[in-house]
Amino acid sequence: MSEPGVKFKNVPKQDRPRERLIEMGPPYLSNQDLLAILLGTGTKEESVMTLAQRVLMHFEGLRLLKDSTIEELTAIKGIGSAKGVLLLAAIEFGKRMHCFKPEERYVIRSPEDGADYVMEEMRQLNQEHFVCMFLNTKNQVLHRQTIFIGSLNASIVHPREVFREAVKRSAASIICAHNHPSGDPSPSQEDIHVTKRLSECGKMIGIELLDHLVIGDRKFVSLKEKGYL
Image 1 (spheres, one colour):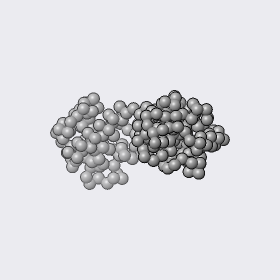
Image 2 (cartoon, one colour):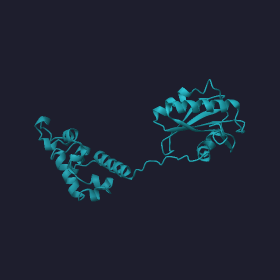
Image 3 (spheres, helix red, strand yellow):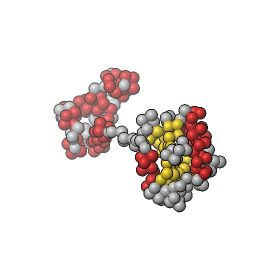
Image 4 (cartoon, helix red, strand yellow):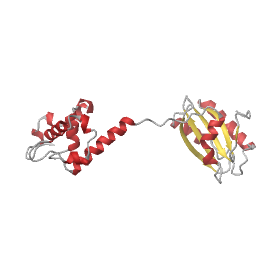
């Protein structure tokens, strides 16, 4: 970050933007400081701070720099292809950060919404999969996870595994779903027993089981609608 031949400890603090970023934080650095950090080094003739200032002056600040090309950058004395590529990558990354929008979470307002969320994946499975959808207070899906694979029975589908993940995800409620490879979603007595057991455990720890969906081939059964919850 300093001119060749100058010992680092003797470089004025204002010419050491890395150290000031660590001590004060990025918001306290100027555009010149930030650009100097990206450039890393200057040339034999000038310090990195001077080079950064010259680059900014060439592009009239950030206004034109944000749309610069590799040819424009490398045309500046002291900016080779490596520095030019680094600057372009940083500019592009900044643009993407600025435009970034968090992915909208899927909202489950009805049994149909829950079934639609898992139907296409689960209806084609050759084995039974027990899946949990963990929801927040707005019924948005925080996470979906396959908890068990195999025939559904109370000894395999243990509430501990289901609600441990719910607590980990800070879920307000859960919806369970499992598929019947036969394509017939009619619930078995074991399905009903597992549902009631999970519901009771959920009530004890304050995480409600909203529904248990049995997925068939393009059709499903809601155990809540059947009156088992």
